[in-house]
Structures are given as structure tokens and as C-alpha cells.
Image (cartoon, rainbow over all chains, first blue to last red; front, side):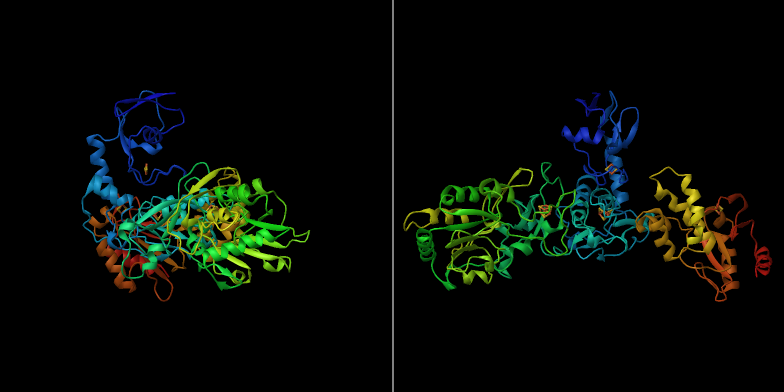
Length: 476
Length: 154
Ligand code: SF4
Ligand code: SF4
Ligand code: FES
Ligand code: FES
């Protein structure tokens, strides 16, 4: 346990640590571009220069701790060199922040403002390079903005292992480039490079010029795309920036999804499916209760559902593994005795989707199979003993498999043909409209928060379950 | 590239296991020596032989300006235009050759005999200005010397 000194503060460091790691742990900020806690150290940007007494300047990210060393992270010497380094890094930078999606969350912008503020001192014309270069079907590359920190190439070599990116040529004409034999389009983790790019060089096609980031706010959530249950941030318009003209649907749309750093589940990464949650959640919604396809009021639908439940002799429930822990527990508590319950797999693997790997992606493409099975067992749905009523909660069950003469109560969020075939159809809210928790395949519980308001005709499943269990005309 | 594989196997023995990507450089040099340039098919085959992604071959190739991706003329004239040579009249001798051959640096004569290039310091500053013709050095260049030399390059 070598003792080292950072800006005069004595710190007990561990033998295997670098000055960068120790400084971060103890709240001494050192700026950096190329260093990343989950990637190998390349030490190529020189932004993390610190001064060590008796040794001069060196980079903190690649400096092992040594007993008694005196490190200064902000001496005059360090400040002067930092400024010079930034001058060097921005020598050919196009300064097109005005049209750059990264503006507002760009480390280069922040550091330049904080530590340099100088315009380019280059006498030559700035080096021109490719903008909006087609890196994959999901990502564009702006080589003029790239500072060649090599985080993106290291990610594809060390984390996703697709080996999809490299650097061609050298010096100020170096370019990040993809290769034909390992297309980045086939890397299901590719979009993480957009997040870890410290500048606006890697751009999401989905998000391109869609919004300035300062109009948006993140809400913590959990990706329901597989049993890993990665924690994510769902970005949507801030209330104070809600559009009052133009297309107001944008106020209710997911602008983008990014990882929520979480060592217990997914670290700083998610897969591309998690980025595409808008496509999952923004399918056309069902927002009216129905009796055999005929729109009715919520109380009327609830009355009929309760009547069916009261009259049934052998009711079966297919419980959604997209239900939150709270909803599943409420169901168990209120209706567990009434119905014979089975867990239903709402979602199956899509054609072409990666089945499973040893990074994040899991074979079970549902978020809460773990808690659902804990409460309702492992048995496959089975309709014997003259099942006369089936409550189907959630999508993905083929109605042709239901017993022909049984009544159907259907709880679903999306506009689907089955809705009209149910005796009672009740629209329920989706994850982005409510609070809850999922239990992932390892038993780790993560929370999601609401981003948007639900429509009036739509019910939260938890309220709905309680209402169905209520004896007579109690409305939620 | 295929016929060079036995040579490459020998080279591989001199490298520790797991350092296959480091073999890219000597293999590429050998390919260029053999074919005169590195063809696309060479990149693909070498990547397979070394078991590395193609980008690692492309990185090496594009880093070193000495590698060529297209055939060049029989005689490759490389003029140094770095400091010492420039101060000793590199521009003059280069302009003279450009005029005589009717091509600019980076170009090859239509008959496929000469390719002209400019390069950085070749470590022969004491005898500036200088150039290389294929693998040989030609130093203390004058216009007369150049004329004589070009006569001899058929
Ligand atoms: S594209 Fe971004 S992450 Fe990749 S090297 Fe350039 S600056 Fe770094
Ligand atoms: S690994 Fe699973 S939970 Fe994580 S982002 Fe991908 S689909 Fe979602
Ligand atoms: S962060 Fe240390 S050199 Fe880039
Ligand atoms: S400058 Fe021409 S050989 Fe050195």
C-alpha cells in the first residue's frame, strides 16, 4: 500500500493502481480523452498530463503509483501544457459545434472552454476530411471532428470483439475506417462507440439532428429486451422545452436511449436492441376498452370482466413476464387463488437477432421471467379440466391455442387483431408510463420510472388487477 | 501471395505465438518485392493466413507510405525534398526531370518506364541533393548527371 501525495493530500494507494485511478477515487479531477475505465490504456491524447515532483510532466493514465510520489494535477506548468495540448488537438478541428449533435455534452467543448479558449494557431489551411462517412447502417463518422483517441477501435477489439474498426494512414490525415470483412453493421454492440466518443465524430443515424441535447432529460429505466435487464436512460423532451407548435407528438416520443452505468448488471454498455426501444414502445397503441370488439367505457368493461370471473368454474390466467415485480405480486396476492396461473412468454427472439453471448445478450427476450416464475412456477400453459375462462395478460400468445369455448379477458397495450376477439379487452399502460421493478436472470432488481403520461382510457395493470379482484362495482 | 507461404511459415517461427499481427510488416514487404505492389487479393489472403482482421493489414499498409497499392514503372525515381536537399537545389533537379519525362510526382510515364515520387529525408543529407532509383542512391545530383543517368535507364 504505497502512500502517495496528490496536490498535497496523503493517499493510501493500491500497488496496481495508476495515478489516474487514485486521483479519481479521491476526487482530484484530471481531464482525459483517450482513457476509459473499461478499455486498455493507450495514452495517446496527452490530455491527462500531471506534474510529478522531481520527474516533470507525464501522463496520469499510464503512470503507476510509486511510494512517496508528489503529484500535482493543476500546477502552472500543467496548466500551460494542457493549453498547448488542446491547441494541438484542435489545430484542425472544424469547430462546427452549431450543427454537431454532441454539442452540449462534448468533452472537447468543455475542456476547450475550461482550459484553452484559443483559436487554432495553424498557419496552414485546416486539414479537410470526410464528414457524414457511412460507417454502418446505424452510425455516421465525421473525420474532421475525430481526435483519434482510439476509444472506438479499442471498443471493437476489446469489448464487442467485432474487430470492425481501425485507423488508416497516419499523422493529420489518419482516419478511422471500417473493414469489409468485419462489417460494423453486424456488431450488436456498435452504438456504444457513439457514447464513448469524446467528441461529435460518431453520430447516431436515428438521432441525427433530431434534437439539441439540452432540450432533453433522461429518465432511468430498464431495457426489457432480454433477461439481462440493462439499466438505461430514456431521453425525452424536458417539460420546459415541450413543443407547443410543430409536431407535438415529439413531446411524447423517446428521443434516444443510452446506458445507465451499472456495475451490477451491464457496466457502461448496452446492446443495439436497447437503443431501439422506441420501435418497441411506439407501436400503435390500444386506448379503448372493448367488449367483443365494441368500444365501451372502463367501468362497463370491468363489470363484464368481473362477471365472467365470478361465473367461471375453471379460470386460467396467462401471466405476462413483462409485468413488473409489483404487478406480478399484486396479481398473485389478489387473483392467485382465483385463477390457475401460468407464466406466458410475451416476446420471442426475432429473426436475425443474436441469441446469447458472454457479454450481455441473453436468450430469454423478456425482462421479468425470473420473478414471474418465482411466483407462478415453471409449467407451460395447459388448458385441461374444462377451462371456461382465460385471462391473457400481455401480447404474444396465439389465440388459436386457447380452448375454443372459453371466455377471454385480454389485457394488452398495443393495437392488435386479437384485441377484438376477446370477450373483454382492457388496454394497459406500458413501461414508459409507470413505476416498477424487474428482476433479471441473476436475481438483480432494477427500477424504471415513468417518462410519459398514459391516456385516460388506459389502465395501469396493478390498478386493473385490484379492480378485477374487488367484489362488486368498485372502480379503479 | 500463395507461393510465398512457405517463406512466411519460416518467418512465423521467429515470432512468439500470439504476435501474428506483427508479421504483417515483413510479409507485406516480401509481397511488394515479389509483385511490385500489394494487390487487394494479397490483403485478403494475408489476413486469412495470419488470422487477423483485414483492418490490421490495411493499417500497416496505409501507415507506411513506402507501400504501393498499384503497379509502378520499371524505374522508380524518388527525389528527396526535405530540408538539406531543398537547400541544395532539389527543386531544380526535380523540375528538370519533370520536364524531361513529362510527368509530375505521383505519376508514371505512359510507356510504363518511369515513376516519379518525392520523399522525405533519405539520410544522405551530406551529399544533397539526392534521389533513389529503385534500390540505389544517386547523390550530389546535377542536371548533367541526371541527363546521363536517364540515358542509361531503358
Ligand atoms: S471517432 Fe471518436 S472515439 Fe473514435 S478515435 Fe475519433 S474521437 Fe476517438
Ligand atoms: S443486452 Fe438485453 S437488456 Fe441489455 S440492452 Fe440488450 S436487449 Fe436490452
Ligand atoms: S487520457 Fe492519458 S493520454 Fe489520453
Ligand atoms: S534532406 Fe535529403 S537526404 Fe536528408
